[in-house]
Each structure stands twice: as structure tokens, then as C-alpha cells.
Image 1 (cartoon, one colour):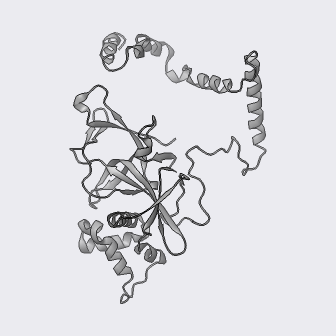
Image 2 (cartoon, one colour):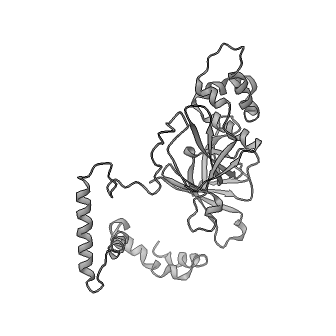
Image 3 (cartoon, helix red, strand yellow):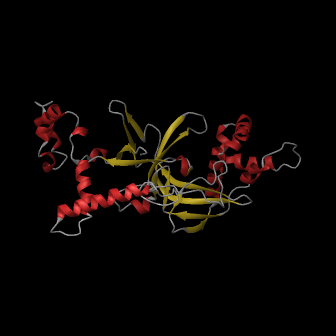
Length: 332
């Protein structure tokens, strides 16, 4: 590898700036002499020095300011262990993408009223008939209390009719006055569907991630609108991953007591077939063609089921301008 580093650098200079390879020739020799980079890199010390610079009070006494700031920080951390858990301090400081605590007015019920923190600025709009049908069906299919009804419907009408007729069939089946079958109160309330008015927001923190709509993330260096989820193929039970971009974040509420709400992401999905999604098994790379969209209308997913990712384009490759490489983000 050390012998071929000059040829490799020449090839990479066709893609990256030349200044990126100032010390590239010495990396192989350093790796052999120094071992793993984790034992000798300077990044933790640079971050420590950067945080210490913020404590400087007298520029004529920089070292003394460093020491004084360090002592003050260590003293504060020591005394924080004598505080109660209800006192907010560095020891129990929540994550910046913290989901928040559950609302007493909305206690957790099945998949409803789960923890999550949305933006304070919210709007309000009405559901269209198509959106109402799709959102209601998606919530029903993911509710554990409805699974027995889903199996009954599939055995009678098949998988293809789920997204078209299941919500109507469930409402008629549950509220059939001539039926002697007893149903849970939650099933009856969910079968009626959500309210026609929904709340909209552009940011939502859940699962340790911060999700934003595509419109908000468009002109930012950090893009938080990419999302993927595992689902089945037309109700056949075959698992597949769907990749898309969040277009809107909405909060749907159900009437009747107790209060029930659920947050949904309205996404634009890419084609999950072999024409729109490819897997490079040799390098374990997944690529999607962002010009091909998913044909079926099923835009909604539950926020708690969403996973975050990032799309990386090919630099200086016009023949692959339509393809993006997937980079999945792990929860820390």
C-alpha cells in the first residue's frame, strides 16, 4: 500500500482538491509506526482547548484563565452530585434532541401519545379525502389492537383491498348493531377516524434524532429531512426498506376521552424496485435514483417508526447525477 500511495493520490486528485493530500504520502508510514489512530489523534485535545478558550477573561493571562476556568468547571460538576434529580445541571442535562416528557393530558395509549418534541411554531390545515383515507389506514395497520381485524379482513378480501376498503369495513363491522361481538372502546374510537383538522410543524425530535421538512433543510448545511423505514410489499409480508424525504410533519388527533394524538410524517418515497434502488453487495452500498418516485399513494409513516439517513451525491460524475448513495445514521 505504501508503494502504491502515489498512484492512488494521483487518481483521487481528479475528484478532491489538491490541498486535501498534503500529508497523504506519510499516512501509511504513520499507521505502521503509531498503530491505531485512536491512541494518538489530537481531536479530543483540540476540542478541550477550544472549550477552554471560551473561559478566557484576561488575554494577558491566558494560562491562568485556563486554569481558573477548569477549576470552576470541575467544582460545579462536583457540587452537582449533591443536587436533587429535579435540578437541571450538566450531570442530568437532556440531549439536544431530547423527546421530552409525556403530557399529563395525553397519557400513552397503545401507539398514541408517545414521547416526542415538536416545534413551537405550528400551523393548522384540513385533511383532504385522499390524505384522510391513507393516514387512517396506516394508523390502523400499525395499531396492535387492530391486528386481529386485519387478519379477518385479509382472509376474506385479500391483501390488495386493504388500502382501499379496510377502514370503511372496520367502521361498519365495529358499529354493526346486529352483531353480538364485543369490541374494545379503543377500537371503536379509532375506527371512527381522526379529526379533519391537523396541526403542522417543520421540526420534530424523536428516537434521538431531529427531523425536519425538506423545505426547511433545503438551504442548510445539515439536512435532516431524509428518512427510511421498513415495510412490506403490498401487504404480502415481504420486508423491504423504503427511502424518502419528509415533506410535512403533522399531528393527528382523535376525538372522545381519553385524548389521543399521533404524529405522522408525510413523505415522498423513491422507487423501491430494482429500477430505482440498487445494492452493491461488494462494497455494501445502497443507491437510489431520486428521479424515480414510488407510484402508490402511501405517504404517511408514524414518527416513532422513522429512521434517519443522508443522501450523498456523486462528485464530478455526470453519468451518475441521478443517483444518490445512502448513508444511514446510527443513534448515539
